[in-house]
Length: 437
Image (tube, rainbow, N blue to C red; front, side, top):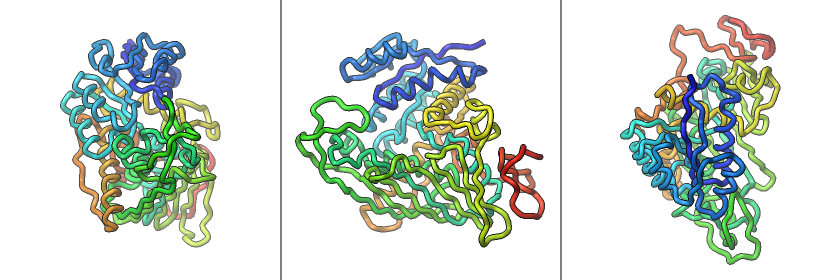
């Protein structure tokens, strides 16, 4: 029997729309899920926006005050897609009201904010999900399994990049996103938070780091009215940009591996250039979000002049099979949010953590805080350990949050579609063909 779960969406900019569409699509891709989301309320302070959302997506009610959501006993789960500075207040209030929460990264402005929401969730005994969507890509989950299986040997170093041009135009409006008190640390919260999560998801905890940041466009025009997304405001009064356009960070992982994490929101000529390369003692793996369903894989015993194969992930990798019947059929960004919604709803249905949770948000925010301290001091900074929050999840296998797990001694590594590892001696395997035991 399928139960319904009353949900609300707080904040209906672009991301609120993405969450809403994900809820609507979950039953199409996961018909066996024990819960069906029912759109009850959309909360948005901009006049008319909630009403438009209700008319388009079928919310039963609208409000301009998110506190109405907390007071409604018919709402059991809430998407929090409001601006960063509201995450802590809304997240804590929803948890205290007994609502399960799906909240966008970075979860507030600091690690203290993320920890406050995580603590409220733990105390209330509700479930959480956090919008680290890039880890949901089947190719990323395949890369994680490949690394954990030892297919590229011992990881030596990695590079994670997140370059975009969403703030590159000099007429981009001076919204809350560029203010320290409301937008936090700029590109660190916007993009580097994803990078910190991917680093930990793939390679485990970061032990220490050193960072450099910069503001390249120091002034922007104030908008005349309400904005959504990355609007422009030509001719408006100029005001100062208070937070970072760019960050470059050297990482030392607890494993001993080294890394580079670089993010920029004003990269002219770059559109969503997000990805990673991970190098090991016997190979490497490469991923580019713009070719989301492909992996570059190099492995074997050649060491020098070892080729890189392009592998198309397929139904055996991550959640690919819920969307496409065979390899090389494309998945897109919105599909990653459907995966996220499914894992959130499954967490609620089974009272077990699936996917990224507030534990992962706290870990990522702790890394971001360390970046800020390092940029201010010019020194290496140790990343303080953040204890897991049991009710928020954060451990376990590829579907759960938490760092990349080691492969236990004597255990057969996982078989990945198109990425079959030889357990005996020999060179690299063919990337094609069906999975073999």
